[in-house]
Length: 310
Ligand code: KPL
Image 1 (cartoon, rainbow, N blue to C red):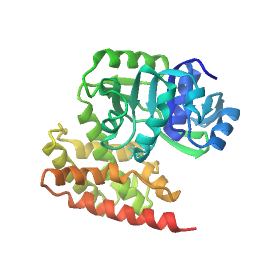
Image 2: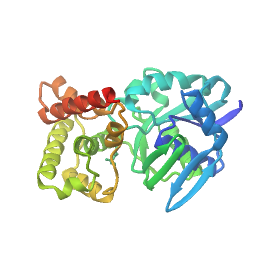
Image 3: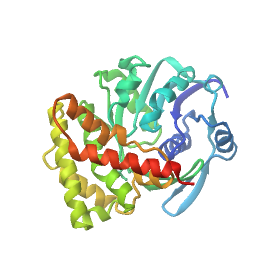
Image 4: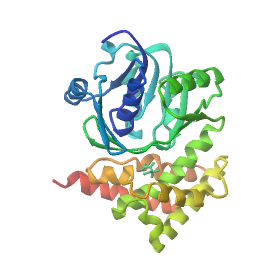
């Protein structure tokens, strides 16, 4: 396929597959960009399998690895792991129109800044999603719960925000916009900093963190520490962020966090872009974030074990 594309979804993980499938079902001209040829061929041939509410459906999708043959997209939406951002955006550029917008809905802090070194900052949008999904196999995703996207323009570009809103609306993706992009990204990072490493180190599902007194205390300590760093960086953090984290544990009680899924699969995690980045930002301001630093080291150890296990 080579022609006009409305959206290029970058990254065939759980969230990339799900959003590509939802937009294709809504009738948008959408393609999914992968970097592994065999997997892309399988997904292109079979489609994306979506399991939701006890039912299974297959959604035909254009999927490939060569951006120069995929068409010319008005929007890129990136879902790759934070450590792959620069490579993935660089690869995607040939499939984007000269004036394309790029929306990042990745976990972690620092993604839009890295993307803005490749794509002009005025065209970069950033946000979070509360949708939960698990990848069961290549191009096979199970929806844990549909949530919504919150996004905006870090450079304050309302025209791009409105146009992207229209795209998401047509694609059937629930969304709201914000002018406080950094506040939104940090709030999600604080949630991930508190839940993800503790689940990855213990093997517990999200809901168990509030059932277990010692882990609940540890989670609260991470939230306090991360919120202090955020505020020192000029970020607005709501007073009840701790309650919010605990209610997310309840609402996603049965989820295995993305970091637990990564360590279980022997994959690299996003710890450097969550707790690691929070500790780094603290140090930049001559402060300390010892719990985030400790959790980062422990997860690095867990990654090392996973990557060397056979
Ligand atoms: O975003 C998540 C993740 O797993 O990365 C949470 C909110 C913790 C849900 O599992």
